[in-house]
Length: 354
Image (cartoon, rainbow, N blue to C red; front, side):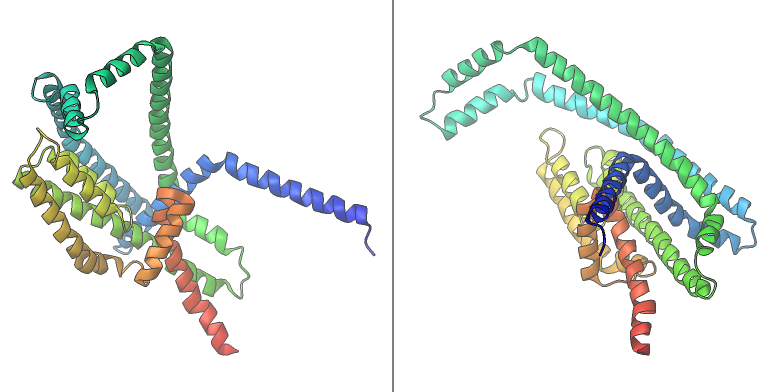
């Protein structure tokens, strides 16, 4: 019979260690997010490096070409898009200022007219006088301090995001360059009798993740380029900004294209910037494009990367978004594909052997 005190002590120590581990994971959540993102991107670049290696290039040359092409693409996008975006955002701000201060749209008068027409029994002037008195009674200094603190917080968030992007870029370069050694170190942990099978499954899983990343980026590029061309043709406001929105939202599985398209159409509906006909053309375009992407473009690109049923894709993306927000939604689909690979090639054969 075991000593009750010893059992209780061991159980208490176990709970304490578990709490320490959970607390450590929560403390290191940001670092773990950087590492996970970098590993995900490194696996996305690995198929490109492997393809160059199969062309009889040494690995260092393949890595150099890959990162040079990647940095050149980003530099080209920045040099071409950022000046246009800055110019068009300035035009957007100027257009809004013209609407508010140029006499084309008086928000106070518009609100008063709407309230008077909608609620005839309401004394609108008395209501606005009450609001004016309430505003005068506010502590403007305290509000200004809160606004200043908010601006400082926003600035800190932007700096933190930029720093995180640099860290992720450095880790991605390191992980991509050391992928073979990292894989070899992991493979050494597996017993020699099972190592060949483990290596085969691991290579299939990492290739699936890599091709998924490349496929998702390809969908984003297609949507961004076609959006820039079509929005310029129909005269939509700020086509470069909207094309960038279309590209980045297309990287989000399932709902990304729909969300980005809705934002673009609503932007075309802003009074003074565009007209309803332009918004209608944009809506028709994105309805057609989403059908073409869902039934033609996406299956051709993604079937080579992750061959999994549509229902599993939906469930995995929703579960990943719930657990890990945007990164979780991105990683969930290749994780589901990896589980299916293990299920098909390990679980089912073992069950058939019994």
